[in-house]
Length: 221
Picture 1: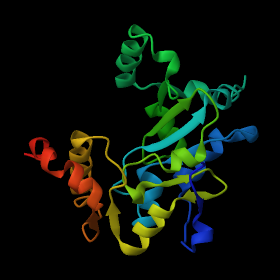
Picture 2: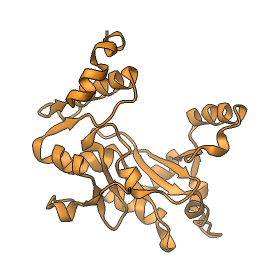
Picture 3: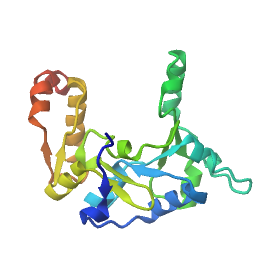
Picture 4: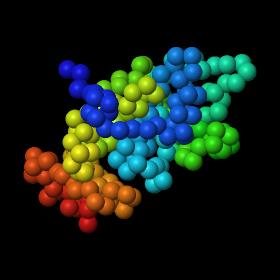
Protein backbone atom coordinates (compact mmCIF):
# COMPACT_ATOMS: atom_id res chain seq x y z
CA UNK A 1 0.00 0.00 0.00
CA UNK A 2 1.42 3.38 -1.05
CA UNK A 3 1.55 5.80 1.93
CA UNK A 4 -0.91 8.69 1.66
CA UNK A 5 0.58 12.06 0.73
CA UNK A 6 -0.90 15.35 -0.45
CA UNK A 7 0.26 18.90 -1.11
CA UNK A 8 0.49 21.94 1.14
CA UNK A 9 -1.93 23.63 -1.22
CA UNK A 10 -4.50 20.93 -0.61
CA UNK A 11 -3.97 21.31 3.13
CA UNK A 12 -4.42 25.08 2.95
CA UNK A 13 -0.93 25.75 4.32
CA UNK A 14 0.94 28.72 2.80
CA UNK A 15 4.44 28.30 1.41
CA UNK A 16 6.95 30.57 -0.27
CA UNK A 17 9.99 28.86 -1.76
CA UNK A 18 13.20 30.58 -0.67
CA UNK A 19 15.66 31.96 -3.26
CA UNK A 20 18.20 29.36 -2.08
CA UNK A 21 15.78 26.52 -2.75
CA UNK A 22 14.73 27.98 -6.08
CA UNK A 23 18.39 28.11 -7.13
CA UNK A 24 19.23 24.56 -6.01
CA UNK A 25 16.15 23.00 -7.58
CA UNK A 26 16.63 25.03 -10.73
CA UNK A 27 20.16 23.72 -11.17
CA UNK A 28 19.29 20.09 -10.42
CA UNK A 29 16.02 19.81 -12.33
CA UNK A 30 17.37 21.16 -15.63
CA UNK A 31 16.13 19.39 -18.75
CA UNK A 32 13.30 17.65 -16.93
CA UNK A 33 15.41 15.92 -14.29
CA UNK A 34 13.86 15.30 -10.86
CA UNK A 35 15.20 16.41 -7.49
CA UNK A 36 13.56 16.42 -4.07
CA UNK A 37 14.40 18.62 -1.09
CA UNK A 38 13.48 17.01 2.21
CA UNK A 39 14.29 17.33 5.89
CA UNK A 40 14.78 20.38 8.04
CA UNK A 41 15.03 23.11 5.43
CA UNK A 42 11.48 22.86 3.98
CA UNK A 43 10.13 22.02 7.46
CA UNK A 44 11.58 25.21 8.95
CA UNK A 45 10.43 27.25 5.95
CA UNK A 46 6.83 26.22 6.61
CA UNK A 47 6.75 25.84 10.39
CA UNK A 48 8.98 28.74 11.44
CA UNK A 49 8.90 30.99 8.40
CA UNK A 50 12.69 31.12 8.66
CA UNK A 51 15.65 28.94 7.75
CA UNK A 52 18.19 30.86 9.85
CA UNK A 53 18.63 27.84 12.15
CA UNK A 54 18.37 25.15 9.49
CA UNK A 55 21.29 22.89 8.72
CA UNK A 56 22.01 21.61 5.23
CA UNK A 57 19.66 21.73 2.28
CA UNK A 58 19.12 17.99 1.86
CA UNK A 59 18.35 16.83 -1.68
CA UNK A 60 17.58 13.40 -3.13
CA UNK A 61 17.97 12.34 -6.78
CA UNK A 62 18.23 9.11 -8.70
CA UNK A 63 21.62 8.13 -10.10
CA UNK A 64 20.17 8.32 -13.61
CA UNK A 65 18.85 11.85 -13.15
CA UNK A 66 22.10 13.05 -11.61
CA UNK A 67 24.30 11.52 -14.32
CA UNK A 68 22.00 13.02 -16.97
CA UNK A 69 23.01 16.51 -15.79
CA UNK A 70 26.14 16.10 -17.92
CA UNK A 71 26.80 19.20 -19.97
CA UNK A 72 30.10 19.85 -21.79
CA UNK A 73 29.84 23.59 -21.16
CA UNK A 74 28.61 23.51 -17.56
CA UNK A 75 28.71 20.15 -15.83
CA UNK A 76 26.74 20.51 -12.60
CA UNK A 77 27.81 17.00 -11.57
CA UNK A 78 31.39 18.20 -11.12
CA UNK A 79 30.23 20.86 -8.69
CA UNK A 80 29.67 18.13 -6.07
CA UNK A 81 32.18 16.01 -4.19
CA UNK A 82 31.82 12.87 -2.10
CA UNK A 83 30.68 13.58 1.44
CA UNK A 84 33.79 12.57 3.37
CA UNK A 85 32.15 10.76 6.34
CA UNK A 86 30.15 8.71 3.84
CA UNK A 87 33.34 7.34 2.29
CA UNK A 88 34.07 5.13 5.32
CA UNK A 89 30.46 3.95 5.32
CA UNK A 90 30.82 2.99 1.64
CA UNK A 91 34.08 1.15 2.29
CA UNK A 92 32.56 -0.84 5.15
CA UNK A 93 29.56 -1.74 2.99
CA UNK A 94 31.86 -2.86 0.20
CA UNK A 95 33.90 -4.92 2.65
CA UNK A 96 30.71 -6.57 3.91
CA UNK A 97 29.53 -7.10 0.32
CA UNK A 98 26.25 -5.24 0.92
CA UNK A 99 27.00 -1.98 -0.90
CA UNK A 100 25.17 -3.12 -4.01
CA UNK A 101 22.00 -3.63 -1.94
CA UNK A 102 21.97 -0.09 -0.56
CA UNK A 103 19.11 1.89 -2.06
CA UNK A 104 21.01 5.13 -1.27
CA UNK A 105 24.64 4.25 -2.01
CA UNK A 106 26.16 7.71 -2.58
CA UNK A 107 26.04 10.95 -0.59
CA UNK A 108 27.59 14.08 -2.11
CA UNK A 109 28.00 17.67 -0.99
CA UNK A 110 28.15 20.88 -2.98
CA UNK A 111 31.68 22.30 -3.09
CA UNK A 112 32.08 25.38 -0.85
CA UNK A 113 33.22 27.60 -3.71
CA UNK A 114 30.14 26.59 -5.72
CA UNK A 115 27.92 27.30 -2.72
CA UNK A 116 29.38 30.81 -2.63
CA UNK A 117 29.04 31.17 -6.41
CA UNK A 118 25.38 30.17 -6.22
CA UNK A 119 24.84 32.67 -3.40
CA UNK A 120 23.57 30.04 -0.97
CA UNK A 121 23.45 30.61 2.78
CA UNK A 122 23.33 26.85 3.55
CA UNK A 123 25.44 23.87 2.49
CA UNK A 124 23.83 21.36 0.13
CA UNK A 125 23.90 17.61 0.68
CA UNK A 126 22.82 15.28 -2.13
CA UNK A 127 21.76 11.67 -1.62
CA UNK A 128 21.68 9.55 -4.76
CA UNK A 129 19.27 6.62 -5.06
CA UNK A 130 20.05 3.61 -7.22
CA UNK A 131 16.57 3.78 -8.74
CA UNK A 132 13.82 6.39 -9.00
CA UNK A 133 13.24 8.23 -5.74
CA UNK A 134 10.08 6.90 -4.03
CA UNK A 135 8.40 10.22 -3.20
CA UNK A 136 5.85 8.84 -0.74
CA UNK A 137 8.54 6.90 1.14
CA UNK A 138 10.77 9.99 1.24
CA UNK A 139 7.93 12.06 2.72
CA UNK A 140 7.48 9.44 5.46
CA UNK A 141 11.22 8.96 6.00
CA UNK A 142 11.53 10.71 9.38
CA UNK A 143 10.78 9.49 12.90
CA UNK A 144 9.00 12.80 13.63
CA UNK A 145 5.72 13.85 12.04
CA UNK A 146 6.56 17.50 11.43
CA UNK A 147 9.50 16.38 9.28
CA UNK A 148 7.24 14.58 6.78
CA UNK A 149 7.64 17.14 4.00
CA UNK A 150 9.30 17.14 0.56
CA UNK A 151 9.62 19.92 -2.03
CA UNK A 152 9.99 18.66 -5.62
CA UNK A 153 10.16 22.12 -7.19
CA UNK A 154 6.60 21.95 -8.50
CA UNK A 155 4.69 21.03 -5.34
CA UNK A 156 5.41 20.55 -1.67
CA UNK A 157 4.26 17.16 -0.45
CA UNK A 158 3.30 16.29 3.12
CA UNK A 159 1.72 13.49 5.11
CA UNK A 160 -1.11 13.56 7.66
CA UNK A 161 1.45 13.59 10.47
CA UNK A 162 2.96 16.84 9.20
CA UNK A 163 -0.44 18.49 8.86
CA UNK A 164 -1.42 17.47 12.39
CA UNK A 165 1.85 18.68 13.89
CA UNK A 166 1.76 21.95 11.97
CA UNK A 167 -1.73 22.95 13.09
CA UNK A 168 -1.27 21.71 16.67
CA UNK A 169 2.33 22.90 17.13
CA UNK A 170 3.40 19.43 18.13
CA UNK A 171 6.34 17.13 17.45
CA UNK A 172 4.94 13.61 17.36
CA UNK A 173 7.17 10.57 17.47
CA UNK A 174 6.08 8.36 14.58
CA UNK A 175 8.17 5.26 15.13
CA UNK A 176 11.10 3.75 17.00
CA UNK A 177 12.78 0.47 16.12
CA UNK A 178 14.11 -0.09 19.62
CA UNK A 179 14.94 1.66 22.89
CA UNK A 180 18.12 3.20 21.49
CA UNK A 181 16.22 4.71 18.54
CA UNK A 182 13.52 5.91 20.94
CA UNK A 183 16.14 7.69 23.05
CA UNK A 184 17.72 9.21 19.95
CA UNK A 185 14.37 10.68 18.93
CA UNK A 186 13.84 12.07 22.43
CA UNK A 187 17.21 13.80 22.14
CA UNK A 188 16.21 15.24 18.78
CA UNK A 189 13.01 16.62 20.28
CA UNK A 190 15.02 18.26 23.04
CA UNK A 191 17.37 19.79 20.49
CA UNK A 192 14.46 21.21 18.52
CA UNK A 193 13.33 23.02 21.67
CA UNK A 194 16.49 25.12 21.45
CA UNK A 195 16.35 25.77 17.71
CA UNK A 196 13.09 27.64 17.25
CA UNK A 197 10.50 25.09 18.34
CA UNK A 198 10.47 26.01 22.04
CA UNK A 199 6.70 26.59 22.00
CA UNK A 200 5.94 23.22 20.46
CA UNK A 201 4.73 20.23 22.47
CA UNK A 202 6.34 16.79 22.22
CA UNK A 203 3.97 13.87 21.74
CA UNK A 204 4.85 10.21 22.27
CA UNK A 205 2.18 7.66 21.31
CA UNK A 206 1.24 5.42 24.28
CA UNK A 207 2.31 2.24 22.49
CA UNK A 208 5.83 3.58 21.91
CA UNK A 209 6.08 4.93 25.44
CA UNK A 210 5.04 1.58 26.90
CA UNK A 211 7.38 -0.39 24.64
CA UNK A 212 10.58 1.63 25.01
CA UNK A 213 10.50 4.43 27.59
CA UNK A 214 11.78 2.46 30.59
CA UNK A 215 14.58 0.74 28.72
CA UNK A 216 15.56 3.97 26.98
CA UNK A 217 16.53 5.62 30.26
CA UNK A 218 19.96 3.99 30.09
CA UNK A 219 20.63 5.94 26.90
CA UNK A 220 19.15 9.18 28.22
CA UNK A 221 21.10 9.29 31.48
